Image 1 (cartoon, rainbow, N blue to C red):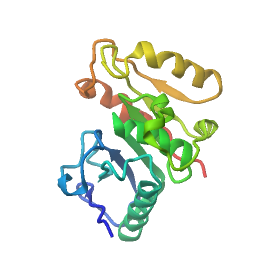
Image 2: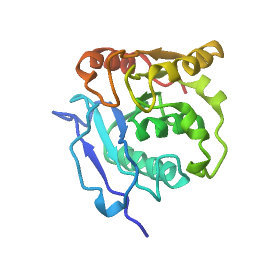
Image 3: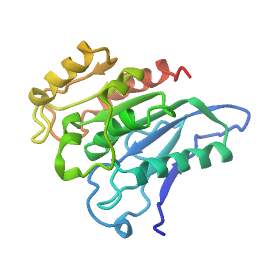
Image 4: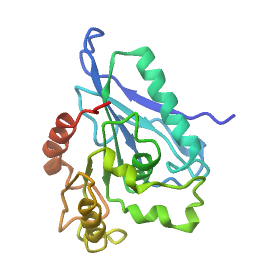
Length: 210
């Protein structure tokens, strides 16, 4: 009985005869109530040539919940029925809590997506008992899809000194990761203009292999 609002940015000059990639962007800070989530722009990681989807999460429906997994599946299904979407070029990007949700989707619902792009996030947050996950997570599923990861060296929450050993561990166990640490960055995305070309190239070079 709770409405899940979302915003869709349609590519400029949309042509129904072309198939278009999709970027789903998960925002940070999932605290609060759904009433406080107002429609926003297309999100910081949007690309004019692709669909950009901005769903919303809150305290009782965080990204790492069954409710949000179902929500994203429904949004994607609706988008496919309404527009000409390239099903092998749907990616999930997230920042902070959204990055935690990106890791969660990569482990618990990897099939619909081509790649995952967590920013300013830390996979070990999903081991926090306070999150009260409804199901187990399966890190081996990360081997099935490539990841593009950015963390800041001066991030007070998830600095690279804390994150680096886990990135190395995942790489050493077969996870494909493009890791772009930003030594002087905090818990923000001030680095986005510099990282955007590599981000766009990564998305373009990693379609889903069904």
